[in-house]
Amino acid sequence: MSGFTGWGVVVTGAGSGMGAVAARRFAQAGARVVVSDIEEAAAQAVARGLPAAIGMRCDVSMPSDCAALVGAAERFLGAPVDVFLANAGLSYAGDFLQADPGELRRVIDVNVSGSIFSAQAALRSLVKSPRASLIFTGSVSGLMGRAQRSVYTASKHALGGLVKSLALEFGPRGVRVNAIAPGPTDTPFLRAHLAKVNDDVGTAVAGLVGGLPLGRLVQPEDFAEAALFLASPAAGAITGHTLALDCGSAAGRM
Image (cartoon, rainbow, N blue to C red; front, side, top):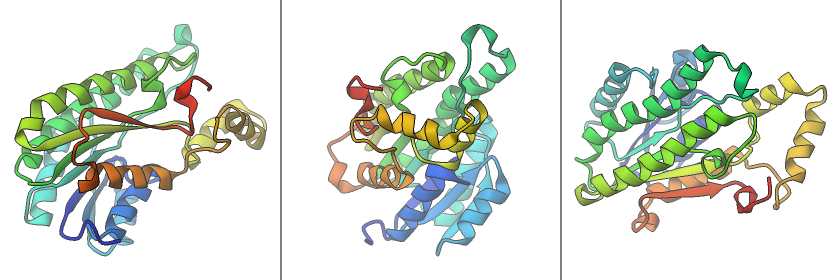
């Protein structure tokens, strides 16, 4: 597939997991890719494996980092950014009354403020592109309530409102704004999290799978394909939308 040849793509939180897979998939489709992550070495490692890419550090909760990322992307591309995949985020699970205030602030700083700062920086470039697409990584937790994940759920619900509002504001300027809301996704991060609270990760994964109508976890490749679709001309009439990528869990069974 070469449908993105000549396009410039930025992916945050791309040092591992879904972001890394999406960066590789855009590159496979012909795009030049800027890989960013709070772990600079991880971003650069992913970029080195791509035909036309750079890797750099970005803490999305810092407006100066977001501005520097977009500036570096424009210099690397020699053109405005066409697709900005705002994938960086933090998860948090635990008893609401026992939650550490510092941890909760960091979740909001990254998931809410980080999304806003990323969007501000990205949109200053995207408005100059004739094929502009801003895509956020949301969560099925942004479509429903989940016990033991209250603050994370609140942060992802906030993202849904941001998507709708930015779609209204920037649609007239030629930018489409959407989000992907993955359900439980088979990544090392998920398995590491399950290992913290379960003696047997395999049993825990089986329990998750048993609650999903399609009987499987979301794969990072599913996420990458959804991102390519939303960025592509095939989704040219889609904006302000959050795409549930959840093996059916948002239908009411989780």
